[in-house]
Length: 112
Length: 110
Image (cartoon, rainbow over all chains, first blue to last red; front, side):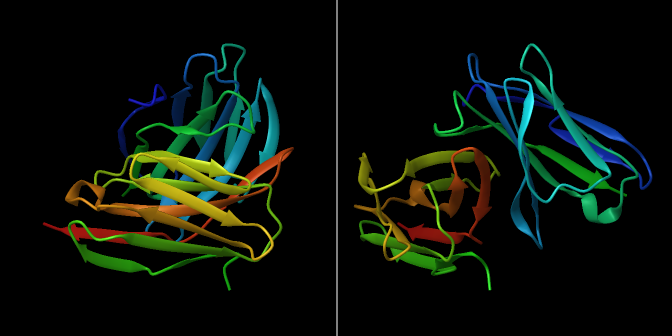
């Protein structure tokens, strides 16, 4: 058990919809990272937060947004969903950015 | 061409064999991660290293910054080591964007 909790585990929805994925980091960890893993693209870094502030941004679409709240949990919002957004979305956390990351079990998003 | 390349893509070996997975990167990095992804999808961070060598149990990771190359070794391999191993390059501390390799699928046969 990594200590990182992601909810929900599975999400099935339709094109055009909006969903929110939630991540609770390991107790004490200040950094949260979001990743997307699709069959054709592999693992891709989306965005990183550190103590509530955005710290690094990767290949995150404009339809996607994220935030980290004062209690350090984070949410990834995906809107105007397309078939290609079907993927596993992982959250990871670390104490500080220069420390190893601990991964949650992921949220499997299926767009029908 | 990917900035981070792994080889081999697939590797099948007998239980007990010594395993080596290679990772080459074309960008300057501050650190390199090795991750293990189980068949169920869960990801475990194995190592994060900036120089030299790290060892944890039967796993050893090495990095040569000048040659832009890292290796992951597994000694006395076991079927439970069967997983996908992924290396990821961290560009710099201050901008912790990870660039991932495509992974090596390892299968250990009893």
